[in-house]
Length: 82
Image 1: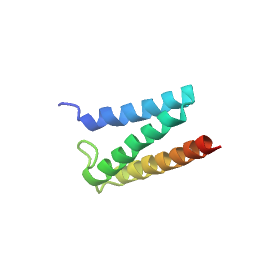
Image 2 (image 1 turned 180 degrees about the vertical axis):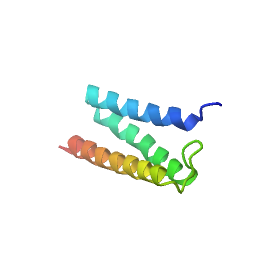
Image 3 (image 1 turned 45 degrees about the vertical axis):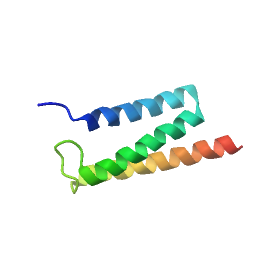
Image 4 (image 1 turned 60 degrees about the vertical axis):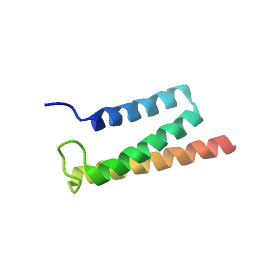
């Protein structure tokens, strides 16, 4: 069984977000949030690997990822404006 690429992209986006928090780079946080927006929309429409898109776990993962990306990008934007 091969590993779907979406798992790699999800892991990469969360690792990039943690790295952006460590180095405190708000521009990098905003760019990572753009990747997280696209991942959440993709997983909401197509599902994650073998999980169907109408699965409760997939829908909640997509919603949490979208909300997290929205909150972090807003906070990073406000910090850049200050």
